[in-house]
Image (cartoon, rainbow, N blue to C red):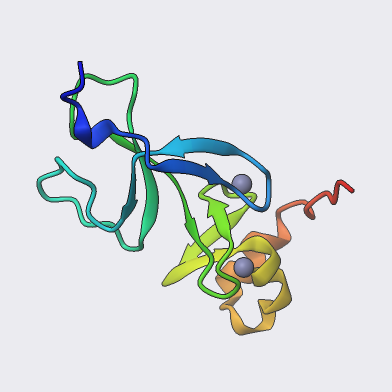
Length: 115
Ligand SMILES: [Zn+2]
Ligand SMILES: [Zn+2]
């Protein structure tokens, strides 16, 4: 009853690749009420609404380090290789990624453009 400040919704996160959208309660690298967790990147985070445990949270997405678009962490939308990249950017700069990333991506289907 008004005490769960850490669960306050800050806004809506919308993935610009798949259009998934969800409210988020925190954006940054160190979610509140987590003791030892520091994320590798600044993320959109939502307190896990299904868990009474305050330290449980869900990572929704992050910003692409190249185009700065909001992208979800779904493997069809982005990948993390030292930084977050959306898949459209990865495809555009594929030759600059290591072989491992290139072969990972070759396994994925191309993004369906819905117009
Ligand atoms: Zn997405
Ligand atoms: Zn991008």
